[in-house]
Image (cartoon, rainbow, N blue to C red; front, side, top):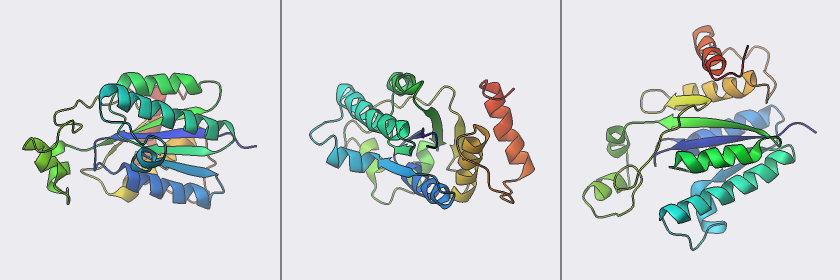
Length: 204
C-alpha cells in the first residue's frame, strides 16, 4: 500500500484554499494517488454542525478534521484539508498527532487582506470591517500565520497554476508522490522549493 499523507492548507477566507485543493487533487489523481479533500465549509455542514466560532469551537472543528485526515492517511490516502485553521497551536497539535502515521505538509495561502477584500464578491470583508459580521477571522478574530510551513503560495500575486505547481513539487521532493517525467516546473522555482525544504531539515 502506498504511503498516505496529509496536505494541510491554511489561510484567510478567500485566499484560494478550496481552489488549490481541487487543482492539487486533480493533479494527484492523474498520477494514480488516492485523494480525499476535506473542505472547511463541507466539514462544518456534515461533521461539525452545531459548532460556533469561539476559539474552543474552532479548535474542536480542526481536531475533527485532523482526526479524519489522519485515518485517511493511515490507509494510504492523501488527505487534503482546506480550512482556515487560524491558530498555530492547534495546527501543531494535529501535526504531532500524525507523526508515525503519515507525513504532514502545511501549505500556507498568503494573501493581504486588502486584496482579499477587493476580490470578495460576497462583500464579507467589507461587512466585517464595518462591524456587521462578528468573529470574522483576520478582522476581529485573530489569524496566526504558520511559522515554518513546508510550502508558501502568494495567492494575491501569482496565478493558481503556479501555486499548484509549487505545492506538487514540494510533495514530490518530500518523496510523498512520484515525480512525472517531463513535468518541468522551472529550474529556478525548483531550486527555491529545494532550498526551503533544506532549511526546514527535510533535505540534506
